[in-house]
Amino acid sequence: MKYGIIGTGAIGGYYGARLAYAGKDVHFLLHHDYKQVKEHGLYVKSYQGDFHLPHIHSYASTHDMPICDIVLVCLKTTNNHLLPSLLPPLLHPDTLVVLIQNGIGVEEDVQKQFPLLQLTAGLAFICSAKTEAGVIHHQSYGQINLGNYSCRNQALIKSLLTDFQQAGIEAQEVEYTEARWKKAVWNMAFNGTTVVLDTQTDQLLKNQITYTLIKDLMLEVIHAAKACGAGNITDEFAQTMLDKTLKMPPYSPSMKLDYDFGRPMEIDYIYSRAIQMARKAGYPMKKMEVVEAALRYKELRHHLSSSPSK
Image (cartoon, rainbow, N blue to C red):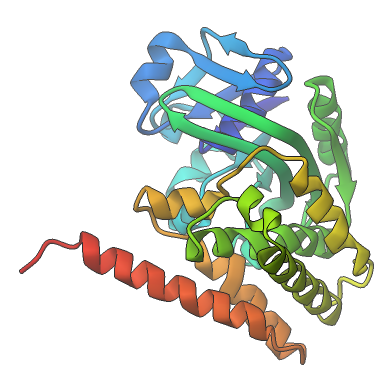
C-alpha cells in the first residue's frame, strides 16, 4: 500500500511518521518546513518513546508525489478549498481518501467536489502539536476510529486498520454518523471554550463552574446527535470524555492554537454545521449558539486588530 499524507502537521505528521517508522511506504506533503524536513528528517517526541525518521519521502507539491492507494487528508478544514488542486495528482480510480479532520459535514462537501471518490472519516482522539519545524510533540492518547462514508472497497479499510495496528496505533472501524458526532462531543465542548475563556483543558476541569459548563455542553451535543440520527450515544459518554480529559496533560486544542497564532478558526465545521443540522432536526443547540457567536466575535476582533491601520 502506498500512502500519501496531505498536511504534515500535528496529526498528519504523527500518523504518517508512525506508519513510515513501521516500514510502510509513506509520502509526505509539507509546506513551511519542507526544507527543514528534507535536510534533517522528521522527529516525533512522544510520551510513548521518541523516534526520528532521518530520510522520508517529502514533497513541496502533490504534482511531484506518486499516485497513492490511501491518502490521509490532515489539513485544517479552513484549507479544504485547496483540495481540488491537491488531490487529483494522487488519485487512481480505487484510491481511498481518509479525512482526518474536525467537524460535521466535511465528507458531504468533499464528495460534492469529487463525486466518484471513496471517502472515509478519520476520527482521532490524540493530544499532539507541531510548534517547531519538523518536530511533532505527541503528548497523550493517539487512537483513531474510521467511519466509512462512501468507500466501495471494504478491503482498503481493513488494510488501513491492519497497517495502523502494525504501526502501534489503536484503530477500529465504527459507524460513520456516530463517529462524527462522538468526536464533536469533545471538540464542541473544549475547542471554543478554551478560546473564549483563554485557557487550557486542565484549567476548565479544575474549576467546578467551568467543569459543569463543559459537561452541559457535551450533553447538548449528545442530545443533538440523537436528534440527527446517532442513536447509540448515551449521556454517560459525556462523563467518559471528561474522565479521559482529566488524565491528559494541560492541552490547548487546535482551535486555541489557531487563534493564538492568528490563523483562521474552524468555526464552520466544528460549530455552525452541527448547529444548523440539529436545528433542522428540531433540537436547537442554544448553549452552542452562544459559543459560536462568541467565537465569531473573537475572530472578527482578532482580524480587525491584526489589520493594518488606514
